[in-house]
Amino acid sequence: MNNRALAVVAALAAVLVVLALVGQNRAPAPSLSGSTLLAGLDAALNDVNEITLVGAGNETIASILRSEQGWTVPEKGGYPADTARIRDALLALSEARVVEEKTSNPEFYDRLGVESVESDSSAGTAVTIRYGDEAFPTVILGDAEGTSQRYARRSDEAVSLLIDRDPELPRSAPQWLQTGILDLRSDRVSEVTIEHADGERLRIFKDEPGQTNYSVDAVPDGRELQYVGVANVTGNVLRELALEDVEPAADDGLEPSVTTRFHTFDGLVVTARGYERGDENWLEFEAGVSAEPVDEPSVESVSEDTGETADTPVPAADGGAVADTVAQSADAGNDGADPAAEAEAINSTVAGWRYRIPAYKYEQMTRRIEDLLNDAE
Image (cartoon, rainbow, N blue to C red; front, side):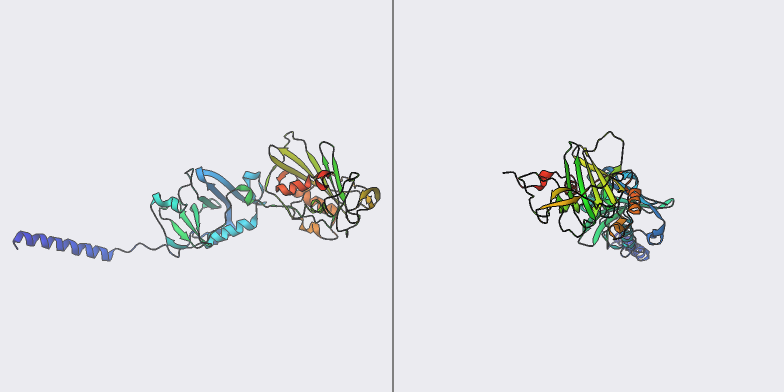
């Protein structure tokens, strides 16, 4: 081997030695496995005052704010938010730890649902949590993995992650709302009247609290009820009544298409007024107190218990109109409740709001006599 070849070999050997020494001295990149998704959130939970969720196309799903009055959803006119749902979501995010690192290649983000929400086709949800004037890094929550894990990516980082939690964060504003409206058991309800805008009126009633089935007033001659107890669902329709959506009540010129009043044996009156707008039906509620409990006999009606004629109570006074209780008045179902105090509690919650409820519930609150009868021969 000549001198020139030896020199080349020596130079290459020297380069390899230098590279080996550099490799030995360079610290390996720290693994994110086991680290928290949002460091410090667990210590700041009591200071969180805003959660913002953004979906595809940078469209805001919901901004959930906390003030002295509690958590509210501005997109729904500042209606109270579901604090239990908020608590569970924050706890899950504060406890979430990295199981393993996934792709850092943006071309593969959509396979995990962690692409930027600027894209109109993004499948993820960008979550920003603020405390005071500070904010944690925005996290894009992607697809679920199995039953208890989820893909995620901090939006200011390239690496995507698999975390050991699957936080439940609804992707629509109504799902963040406190859903309970009213809870009024049928064993308290003595009478329900449904008055339609065209003048038709349906009345069901019980003579006493222990009566099993509601009687139906003014059944046409020669007609029969479909079955004993056909009106019972209507009498129980306010039990655990929950909203599907809500909006501030507006003076928009709409006239009620139906007015439904629920009277209780102890004098509470709940009135619901229904409004039709397009293919949607909305309700406004108000509570009042009748002059005195319904206890006086009056007209003859068909009893569902016996099928015979029975004396029925005179309808109680309206007592003030529209009633619904965002039923933190679960106390409303308690025996011995003060109807005046109960009505005040209901109105403090529902005044100024218009609700959309499940369609099957709305149908029960707007029935007509023909809905309860067998087909005419």
